[in-house]
Length: 111
Image 1 (cartoon, one colour):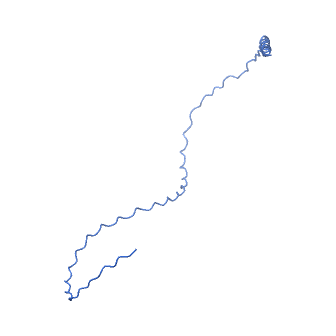
Image 2 (cartoon, rainbow, N blue to C red):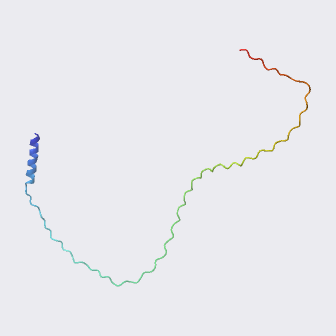
Image 3 (cartoon, rainbow, N blue to C red):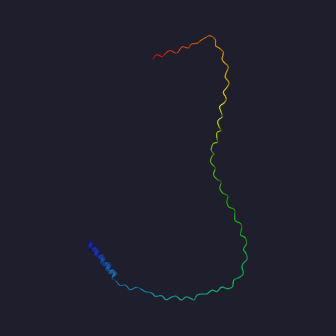
């Protein structure tokens, strides 16, 4: 089966390429064209008048407002003040009476 299909394809290729076909040639006569037209310029005319000034253009549209700025940095804290002067020494206290008070320590807790 494998070789018979190959053989059939080769025979078909040779059979189709072996046919001699004559090319078809069609000769068309050239179209008649009239002779070229030659344009000869005449003398130059006088110069034209100067044109008027153009109209003024419209004003442009107003731009959008800018964005709000960011908050500024905190201000500088002032320098620290110097230490105040030492106060005056107080008067000497009065001498006490002859009574002495003794405070006993608290008793230890029993656990």
